[in-house]
Amino acid sequence: MKRPLGAQISHMLKDRGVDVIFGIPGVHNQELYRGIEEAGLTHVLTRHEQGAGFMADGYARATGKPGVAYVITGPGLCNIMTPMGQAYSDSVPMLVVSSCLDETQAVHGQLHQMKDQRGAADTVADWSCQANTAQAAYGLIERAFEEFELSRPRPKHIQVPISQLEADADPAPFPNQPALRTKVLPPDVAPVVSLLNIARRPLFILGGGARSNLWRQILTELGAACFTTYAGRGLAGLGYELDFGATLPRPASAEVIGSADLVVAVGAELGEVDLWRDTLGHGTQLVRVDLDPKVLGDHHRAGIKLQADGESFAKALWAAVDSVKPATGWTPAEVSQARARWKAEVDAERPGIVPVLDTLRDAMPADTMIYSDMTQIAYVAKEVWDMAYPYHWHHPTGFGTLGYALPAAIGGAVARRGRPTAAIAGDYGFHYTMMELGVAVELGLSLPIILWDNGKLKEIEDSMVRGQIAPNAVVARNPDFCKLAEAFGALSAAPSNLAEMQAAVGAAFDAPVPTLIRVTPDIV
Image 1 (cartoon, one colour):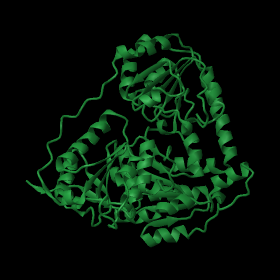
Image 2 (spheres, rainbow, N blue to C red):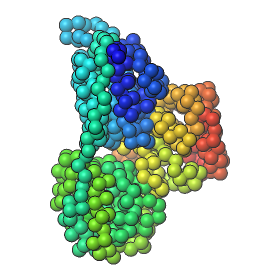
Image 3 (cartoon, rainbow, N blue to C red):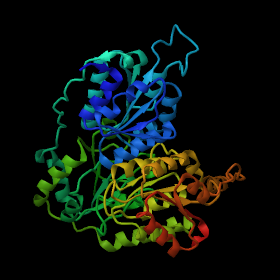
Image 4 (cartoon, rainbow, N blue to C red):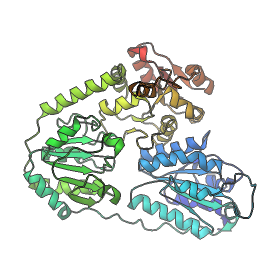
């Protein structure tokens, strides 16, 4: 049945497993909305395109499926570019579909006109392409979904001229048989197995791309120690005695890594935001396993490189574990001593936050999925809060965008109806996207929002002091956050001690609307 192309796109997305669209309609993209209800899609109306992008990001991280957003020409696309940049750096599958003007070279002064809209999006997306026909639009959507499965997942942008969205088009073709990613087989890991057989102190570094539920068993059988990146927290599970945790940024972690006689990094970029130093610290053989050839060829100079996904590598390694003699070079005592020392360092660097986090952790169900913002309380949490499950704490690690936590948590909560989801934000970053609180109220989300309110850009103030710069422009007037939340229709709490905070968090998971819980440093 022929329909306007905008409607056909919604039907095509539904056929490829999409069930939620985040976005804002406008006169230039309204044709995309013609087929949403008919196709059986749910649309979440956001207050700003930046919120739409972060919600799509949060949804994608919670489900593993691509998050999809519809935006208008010009400012709509520009507003979502920050979330696209975040999704690019953190390897999040996101598809942004926008309209575009039919002609921009010979016609000037049009609504939402940009010099090069596609080129602008291309700076923060894996790719940005224009579809001038229905078949081109279908082909680009198919390409995007294939690449989400086969390669490092990153955001894609497709723009379609307004006249094409309005024009009748035949339906999209039926979905292709999904392409199969090349899997690692047991023979492929033979060189790694050989090295493990002679290693006394093997060390694994597990990143966000190491996706597998086998790592605890593998590490236990091998007698191997491990670090995780922030994105890899939880892969070793709680209580593994040889887990150094997400403490790679601790300067002394380089000494620990240097004491290993084999280092295997799986799905870990090992970039600046993973290490906060130039070198890993290894003085022995380094094995890298990653989908991205750029990672395999970086300055860490791995001796053995496997271009593969972490899950199939883990399965192949698990199949060969019986042939490896367990290592005995690591002891639980040295790991626990190092972790205790590093936790004390973290507490000294940002005093008073660790006790708050210990209480928050006890107040939340173990399977709570947490979305955090660029704020001191999150920086501390990433190093000291061990996760029971992998991929249950999401942070804007690479691009480092403020305003991420609330909308991303909304996207996650939409995907996880009936399961616990929480947001942790700082007072300054909350200003960026606090209007999305209205979306959470409309959707009736039982969402605790932990607002760390120190009344300033404390991390920047501390950095200025360390740089011998008189602190400047680090204090902004805050509203009464509790009254603000209530004005949106949310609940609020301002606990005066840790026990009250714990009770407020517990109640928030059962509330019919989100609850903003304002926490200040003097709570300890």
